[in-house]
Length: 141
Image (cartoon, rainbow, N blue to C red; front, side):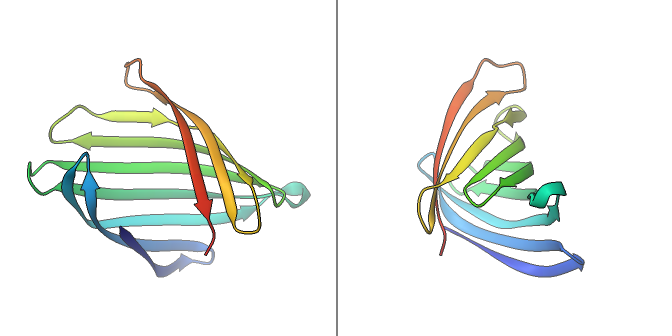
């Protein structure tokens, strides 16, 4: 469970937010003692729109005392009211493992008035052979 709260605009349309969280990672109790996010929406020709965001967080596992540091860089586009495309670079470094970088592009489709499905693929960019499939469900509230 986490809480993200906008801190305000650093410039018109440029939003900064802070995050706190508690939960479990791989079965171990964990804290997210603080994260920072930045986001900015923009308009494109033809009535299209999009956004960029940067999210950073530290995750502290309470039993092993392992700390992971992560930063995600996202570029997204709205294609009308029904579809979105998302291009993201996920980065991380851990006190227990190597650095990580992944590229998970995805498409989001509105299913109803307040729900969406996200489908995508993920590829490891650090020389590994890990590939994945992304399936997500979004709910507006």
